Image (cartoon, rainbow, N blue to C red):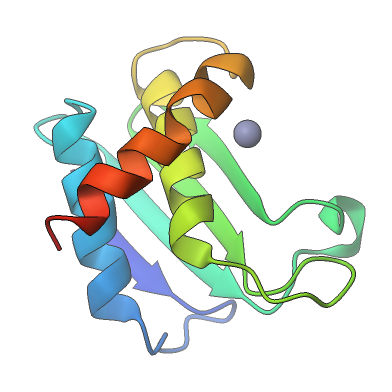
Length: 121
Ligand SMILES: [Zn+2]
């Protein structure tokens, strides 16, 4: 897996190193680190209008996955982008392994994944 972290227009993100380490550690635990995947993580203040109720998105194909993280929800409240990233990394695994994007298995595991990755970065 090749991870890149960028702002909405390719700009530098101040937490780049943390996000890179966090995503890599998630990918290791989720057993997708050795796959041929380009993972692009884009961090912006909020998501586009059509997704403004979401704080994260994950889409793509098994070899090319994009994750978008919002610093704020539609109400303007600040978000923990690492918690959102843990959630989206499980979706990334679903895409990488050709599974359907289901919420339930993600919600069941996101807190545990976040917790164990926080212990090791
Ligand atoms: Zn989700």
